[in-house]
Length: 269
Image 1 (tube, one colour):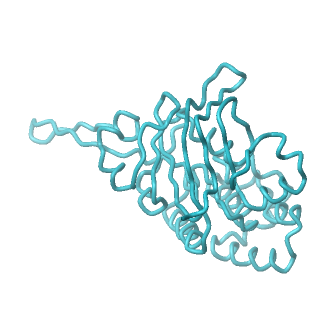
Image 2 (image 1 turned 90 degrees about the vertical axis):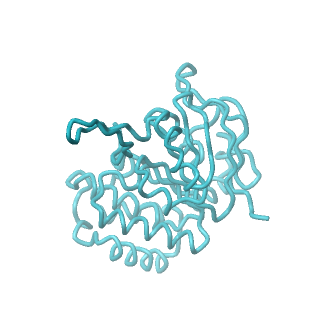
């Protein structure tokens, strides 16, 4: 039986105690799984990822990481905090949240150096990622000088270099060109083949089949409305349309109106 990484039971969360973000979420994630979370903007996807990364904590319900309750007081234990931060890495939806050092190189190296990872190991990972994502020309630049796509590549690199067992990614391909998107997906698949658990939130339905074994669909009611294999979810046009993941496009040919579903290809701000 696979080791359970995260187990959420009846999880509720609200911002400032009045803006609901998650309403009764149950979710289990096993070691080595590829999980994809999809849903319209504001359905709770980013909130879920932040809870899994221990950045915010639930109002009600239970969140367990490797069988231990994930609570704010848990991070008062220095050993637990360090082990968790080495085990779980998050790529934020907004890369500006993640990048704060004077140069790109310093940003990439900041995390592993803070965690005390061996310097030779850091150097090896650094070279591999810089080469794979083709960012060597960015290393001496300031993050604020980068394009959105360049910032996202640097943010992905700064998380992957810590070699976490669990990779959590919030819209990792948003704003990227097709070739870079391909590189990111290939890198995630390689990490999964090496045993890592991958949890991704995305609006880009074109990448869902590759990056997931199981898909969870969030509704505007901030809860999981459906789950299943990528094929099952992506073939359910009504489910996707009802939850604002595809739209109906109308056009005319020879005075005849045709209606086709279209997937959302870009993130909705």
